[in-house]
Length: 431
Ligand SMILES: Cc1ncc(COP(=O)(O)O)c(C=O)c1O
Image 1 (cartoon, rainbow, N blue to C red):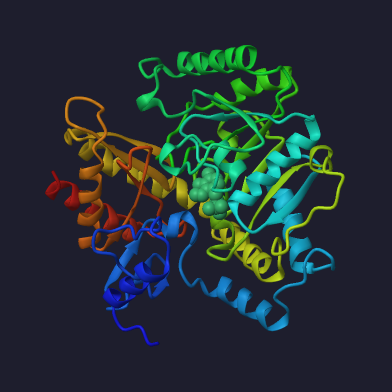
Image 2 (image 1 turned 135 degrees about the vertical axis):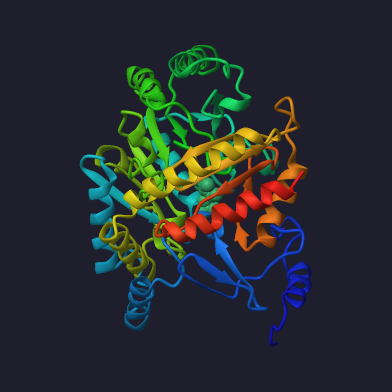
């Protein structure tokens, strides 16, 4: 059947997909094609894409070098599995090990961020002989039973059962933390004290691992003070508890100051998980960790699609593009420009509580004027006002009241300014 309009496509979407899947906008848009920082719908309308299908088209749409790498690999072989030696997979594992900052690293590729986190947790459980895990409040780690068990986002929790015993620590979502009035160092001290008390009071004393997102993604780009996870790491190391950094949203230079989110904290994780942007849209994810930890699984275990030649060819081309064009530096420069231009607008808008984030990962949180009562209604109206001005941004946060901005890492200054102008105009007409 030929698809002609977005409206027809919406009817078919509703008829064949389950009801818990929902298009983002009140009047949904289709995406037919993309180029660089832009996408076009079926009617030919052009949008500046500041969400990338949830930070997954990472550097830009239809980047010729990446498309070519995928096309060339597709003509050779698309799947082999880890039963056979495949050069793209081994070469990309070598590259990931090298950029990970983890000594003597081993890499296991998976088909999703959820599966990467499942693998990291499974590895920690095998290594420590314990099913006790610590995670952060306001976290999101995926949709399997174990990934949901370490997720503290009520709107994403289908069921609470899992084989894990999980306790949640106060983390980086400062706006709604009981410690919100504290300055950076006292805030960190308070959260570390909470961690220590949780271990002492609520666990059986043999905790396998703590998992955390350096900047919480689905949780609305919530950022803890620099050094936060390093301070926690000291308490973890004293008790032989592994630290897993979920870099699914924060990896590959997006935060500008660092290649990985963990690098803001003076700690090297025992394992790090990645997904989303690494294949610039092609399914690619995995775990990288110290050999001593990664080798703890001593039974057969493999992931059919993990590290297939097509996805690892995309990963190699994406990473090469990030390095060649120094996109981490671009994320830093463009991120600073975004903060600078938005700060005065946020200051004068009483229904925006704050602008937060780092590099090309920034968010604003909408509240009732005069307090911090969440206002998801105004967030929805702002999202649509942006769309009407040709700008696609994302939504997030525990209450759906956060607008998330994640432009392509290769965005130009002119494109960034175009988006900022559209966002400011949208803020000015929204109330
Ligand atoms: C930080 C984080 N971890 C894990 C996941 C799960 O990844 P996936 O949807 O690929 O399973 C996500 C997805 O949004 C995420 O943001």
